Length: 118
Image 1: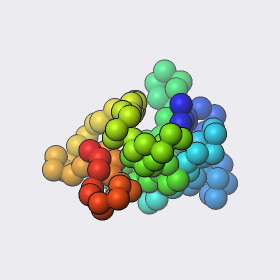
Image 2: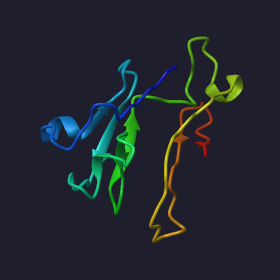
Image 3: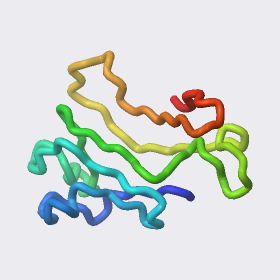
């Protein structure tokens, strides 16, 4: 696994500089969290089953930096050539803008400056 972000152990009581950064266990990538309220509305929350989660709502966003799924791998091959599995666990509720993208994964890393992603 190249990138593994987990909410386990996270909470809104962390100091501001810590709670706004989500580092991968292997330090492959770091996610920057922006425009969070850090209360019971969004941020690091616990669901009804006691599972920690990152709740992103109303203008808040998360950007993963330092990880390029479509970039060159250890064999100097592009991710598009060798294949890739991306697994996300997410839940959507109270949607107000059905035309806004929920998740995007884009890169200009190939040699022809062609946009790769979904």
